[in-house]
Image 1 (cartoon, rainbow, N blue to C red):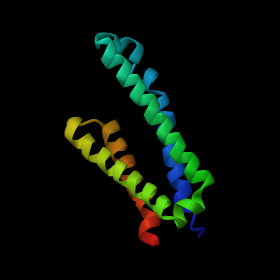
Image 2 (cartoon, one colour):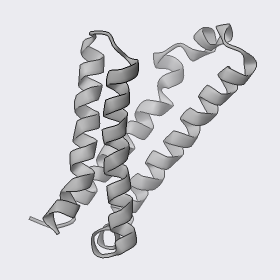
Image 3 (cartoon, rainbow, N blue to C red):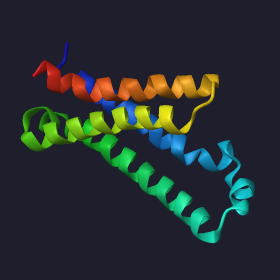
Length: 126
């Protein structure tokens, strides 16, 4: 197996979440739903979502184009570890803040756990 496969899978995972976040306006009907928020909350919600989308795209690009650097440098290992902890934290926050039973939340929880494992995989295999 190519040692870069886990990194490429991390890239696919990150790209998938970038696309998912770009769909938030339609999925959550933000044009209508965010009208009930203050202007600041509406702006911050959308800005944070766009910046998070940018981060996911940047991580995906690093995974696709700099896989060897992610595998072979301390900085690459730091980024992989940080992303693994990001997904672990997101999984914990899901359990703390979205306390209701819905199949979609369970799917997201699995995908968050998958992200934590995928980004940790190359570090554990080293």
